[in-house]
Amino acid sequence: MTRHISDTASDTASDTAPDTAPDASTDTATDAAPILAGLLTDEGAADPHPLFERARTLGPVVPAGDGLLLVTGYQEAERLTRDRAFGILSGAAREPADPGSAPAAHLSRRIVAASLLETDPPHHTRLRSLVSSFFAGRRIRSFEALIAAEVDDLLDGMPDHANPSGTVDFMEAFASRLPMRVICELLGVPRADRLRFRAAASALTLTLELAPPPDAVAAADQAVAELVEYFAGLAARRRADPRDDLASALASAAHGPEPRLSGHEMLSMFVLLLVAGFDTTVNLLGNATALALRHPLAADELRTGRTPATGFTDEVLRLESPVQYAARVPLRTGLTVGGVPAPLGTIALVFLGAANRDPRQYDRPAEFDPLRTGPQPLAFGGGAHFCLGAPLARLEGNIALPALLRRFPRLRPAGEPVRRRGLMMRGYERLPVTLG
Ligand code: HEM
Image (tube, rainbow, N blue to C red):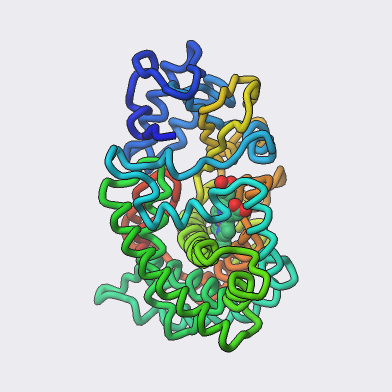
């Protein structure tokens, strides 16, 4: 599959002739293709919800030309992510529009393609079973004290990040630091090595967007080369001197007497866990803080314990989902999504952020209400690929937010936040605050 979603979305539905997919378009396609094109602009990505609502008026699942489907309904999204007749979208469809560059030519592509994120069973099942125990509830709860200590340490340091007028960028001073510390601890990365990964992880995340900037893949290749070199060295050290950490488990699974994953798959797993555990959670923390700043009463209720942190975190995940979409492809003929035909070659874009505001599931879906009841948000996907790190991400949010508000009860916005670019990851580049 070599279609470029950024190209097809801006084509008119009628003049594209997909080579592999029979045309899934109907009369609505000419309406939904511009909606997708709008979502892929900077303005659309910055404020996708009006476009999601326009798509919703056409139906919970709408064709958008050239075999693309936009899924905005909660039930349809949930069913699709659980449906084993659909598989994961491989990175090939995200290729930059450069005919000479095959996916295999890019280290960053090869690393993601071998990972949990882009494999289907049976490979996916084997890979996931190797690491799932490290993310199980009990093991993650044992991180509670460590996360609380890291949160305290970062809060202690926040005033040092203030510029001369007293403004602190929350993203730089806190949100981008906590998740890297936590995921590195889980992986078994020594403390001294942790600072170097933030830029590399973000470079790779950018290539997971539907329409990455032209130079993103080259930057990701370089970043991944550094990560691979580092993790190959770490694995070698753990093989020589094993510990009770994920790095040792991965090293022994790849290089033990009966290898259960290849050396490339091991490196892919290291890189994926680092990257998946980083920007996602950075944006959860940033989005949560931005919502707290916009809703001082709700923030106060959280600070004083009248609103449980779990409800607050879940409502942030629902209203401002850090990961806005996942993608699925049919694995056999004759399938439909929400009643809409999905012939082979179709790409269904599952807009989690839209599903999480489906009015059929949530009253007043655009309102922030940490005490609301209703189904769990679909922020972590569903089915076989349900986010492995969901309990960890929730725990970080549940600990960090109340601690931040208790430490700085007069936390206030200090100017306009700057949104990060891209549609998949929803969050902020900068979130200026004063600590009070
Ligand atoms: C708020 C933070 C997070 C959000 C919103 C999030 C969201 C998601 C979503 C939507 C998926 C499913 C993708 C798909 O179905 O195609 C996913 C998968 C995954 N996430 Fe997260 N994630 C978060 C934090 C984490 C953390 C902390 C880790 C820790 C390492 C992590 C590791 C993973 C992994 C390994 C997968 C792939 C699972 C698989 O394919 O079997 N995530 N995440």
